Length: 296
Image (tube, rainbow, N blue to C red):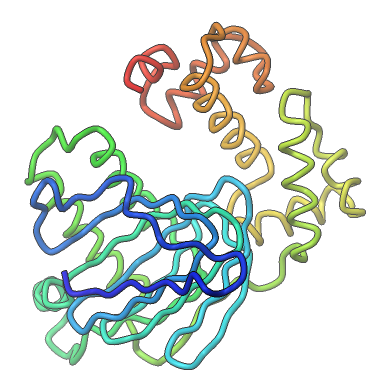
């Protein structure tokens, strides 16, 4: 796929870009390229005349990203589920000063046009996508994570499954990000950057304990009601859902890097029991903790 990536390691604290951890190029998927990255502090530039670019954050902790797209600039904290879209022809430059985990999806613009022809009414004259610096579309996130899961498992389901997901992704892009008028969607309101980092750092520091909503609200000087509302505006999920995600992420790390028993890991991650960890872990990964450890 014709896309360019550049880095400028001469800038302070920036490193050269690393190759993808995984890439669908290995499996010959058509009309789509899916790649998983974990990058050091760096800078990346993208532009393609023939592909739309989607970038989904996989960060477990909010991380600031500076972006510029066709002369418009944007800076925000990105966390898991936040999505950027650079339509075909647009120039997107991103820069970050902490490690970044993200999923990159390049979708052939011709394929999107073909899907539009068979999906939209005949009066639709273009398939232009809205440029998005930072937005959240749960349906697209779910499809992207299914593609990532397929990639991580070695694409066992075959080309038909990948093609089906690619088609569904195109339909949802047309449904939620089709341009009738130029727009850039950003979150409205929410916690300040300082409050969000303070709250998420508090969660990480106290993950093994019985976290209470009142403690989180107090940590940023808000009432429980206002904290819950603003936290969801900032992250797209409730504080409870965010805490569960972090506990699962820590459990995955400990399963991969230690020989601790599942019961010990459950307690270290703040789960009340072995079965509580098992149930939550399966809901988030599709695997039991034991099977996850064996697969690593």
